[in-house]
Image 1 (cartoon, rainbow, N blue to C red):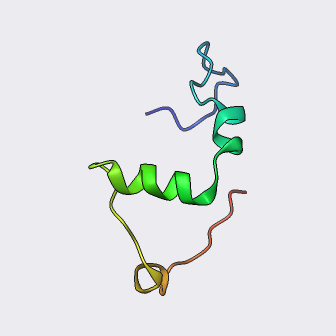
Image 2 (image 1 turned 90 degrees about the vertical axis):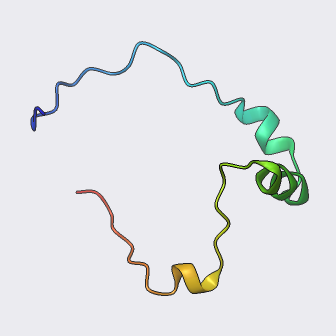
Length: 56
């Protein structure tokens, strides 16, 4: 893997429809997440020992 950044960005645009996502209620988003079999729910215990890391 090349450790140096190339400065190139992907030619493809993201496929997220941000306007649609922002218009959804929290309850709608939670329902969608809970119905997705690839999503692993987390709770406060999962994040209790988490560490915030910011890129430099």
